[in-house]
Image 1 (tube, rainbow, N blue to C red):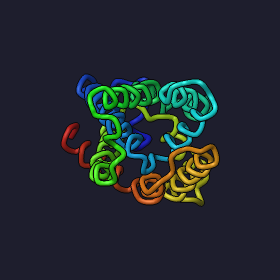
Image 2 (cartoon, helix red, strand yellow; image 1 turned 30 degrees about the horizontal axis):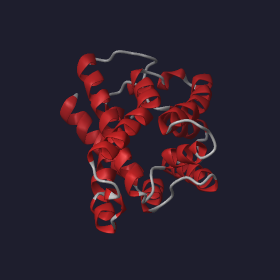
Image 3 (spheres, rainbow, N blue to C red; image 1 turned 60 degrees about the horizontal axis):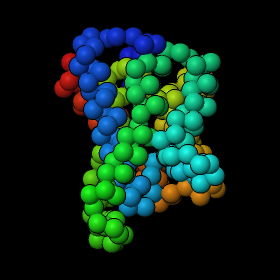
Image 4 (cartoon, rainbow, N blue to C red; image 1 turned 90 degrees about the vertical axis):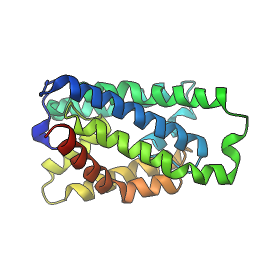
Length: 215
């Protein structure tokens, strides 16, 4: 997502299509995240910190994620409101609760211990990760704003010219991963992969989706 795509609650054309893509993206992202939480092979760095915080407060994952996003949102709002939009609200307010919904659904329809088998866990690793990455790329390509977590690395890289965005984003992810690990969050192969390698993949998927949906 480039800065030119972003205006505070702007409605770039075709707005309704962009809004639908954003909603689908956040939903798919929440679906993938619920699978990654269930197989316990790690989650993305932001969710890792959220799970760590959830160990110390009597709130659901969705509520903890919203509270964590509100902290980063305060910095984004103070530094650059151009990143705030409908996508910000969609990701910040609903992603965690969508993940909670699918987590509840798996417990309702799947037998107890389903995600405990090693074969099941590793078989669902790629589908869960693909859902997380594709959903992230879809909500970003809508051009309707960014989550506070995704926006702050852009803001930092624009202000610190000597460090590339890729480096800033990697350090940002690693900081959240370390904080999440210290709090007892779920750190695993997924967390490391997202922190080191998945930024370029999401950017590539976002570019492809943008050219197909909004060209």
